[in-house]
Length: 187
Image (cartoon, rainbow, N blue to C red; front, side, top):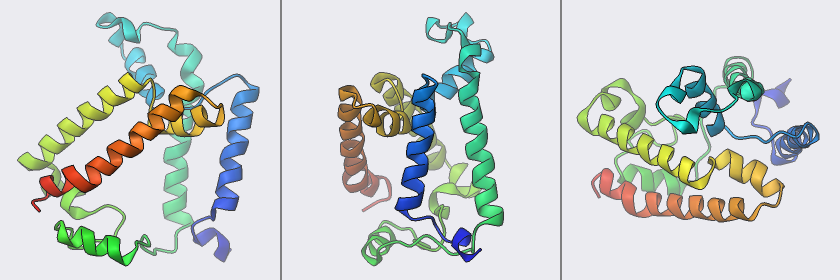
């Protein structure tokens, strides 16, 4: 039982992800979380306002099970399969985050400086959420999918556009980490 209370190593979780992808390929499906948002918007009637949302959303209901499974799986993992340990961060990363103003870096998964209600409901927090949400939405639409869709499904299917998108995601992440994040948090 102790094995279940620790993070699973790559040689367990990697083959499980591969198994899911093989099952999806067998049934002629592709995986991606951002397509679920399109489906949810279509169900809600967004097709009245944009052609992008006019499609047979009923054919994509199966993918909503992925979202439900991710939420249920996350709840089960945190509630029943967690030993309460915090995320293991490299000491240099903790030091860098403290320099950016994250006081409790490495002590919780979600830093309070970004995710507690006081921070979220501040002008800076709301601005960050709105701008970040717009950029993620725009980037996902422009790239034709999200990080999970391109990095997991697209790369496993050897799709060149997914390789280009994943390289772009990594470059964007590096720019955000080393250039923009220090500007936002005042270094």
